[in-house]
Amino acid sequence: MPVDKICGMKVKEDTPYKSQFQGKTFYFCSAGCKETFDKNPLKNSR
Image (cartoon, rainbow, N blue to C red; front, side, top):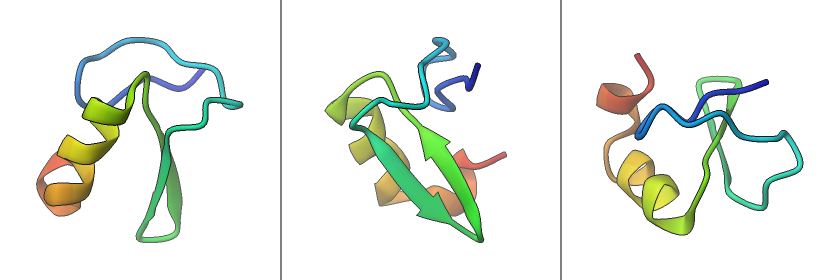
C-alpha cells in the first residue's frame, strides 16, 4: 500500500489524489497533501 509522502498516511492506489514525477506515481490522502507535493516535488519525493 502506498504511503503519502507528505503526512505518512497509508493510501489506496485508487485515491483521486495522484501526481506523476520523474516517471513515478505518488499517492496522497487529500487534496492538501497533493498540493503541498506539487509545489515542490523534488524536495517532497525523497
